[in-house]
Length: 246
Picture 1 (cartoon, rainbow, N blue to C red):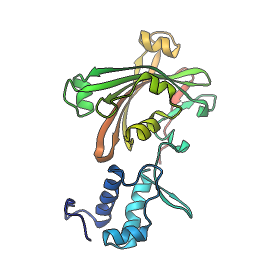
Picture 2: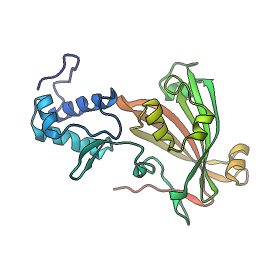
Picture 3: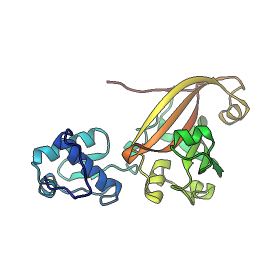
């Protein structure tokens, strides 16, 4: 396989994993942007000097992780948060009695701050580095469902304001992808039960001290770089957390 001199793949890495890494780097550098078609398997095989089967195995793995999307008869495309199907990929909220397609995002606040110890550690920043904090409410059928507090690296979202959030009709991750070229690839979540404090109780329209589900999410872009820390307070009054396994 002919590789650029800047690429140093470990000798023990399977060949298809090396091809996956090369394709991922092309995604990361913007050679193929979200929604773009990537070259065919035969074209990639020639480019990388490997068999089509090796390329296919790399693409299969990336498709299984929602980095790429195969479309029958059309080719393979870079996954995008513009796809309505991607909206619920990172949202495990379910309503007890209504359709979540009516979910509405209401931005509340957006301000700049300096990273404290916890935020700096979570987002791999220096303590005191610039960050942006966003607060928003998710409503379902006019009922408050989730109160989100979101921490973002300031250098990646330098001009993000409350006006931009309010004027956007995109999902939050689609906005990050299209305006800031920051694509959310995967997320780690931790769940625990908490009691509603005054702020969350008021926003979620529940009594102070009511049980809430706190979902802490760290979202990563390419190369496992953390680019978002989100603390979502889920109302348990009319909603529940749902995740289909297997």
